[in-house]
Image (cartoon, rainbow, N blue to C red; front, side, top):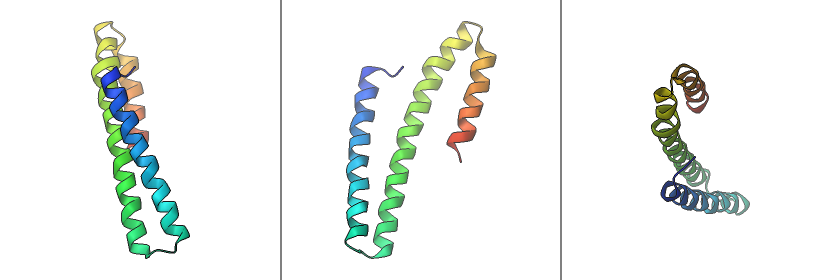
Length: 89
């Protein structure tokens, strides 16, 4: 579970990304220069990666740490490795 402070920050970031994606759609509709569109797609992808990394960090510091302290570390570490594998693709 995300702390309220982190959660609000992530919500704000996602709202900015929503606007950015809408902007990319408009660029495509307006037949803007391909390179300009690609740069915006790259920026949006980087923004999503940052959101994902923030959630991953929170999960590791919170859920995984708690599981290790409660002797449930092996299953949580296995889950974390699976998530990392998917996240990095």
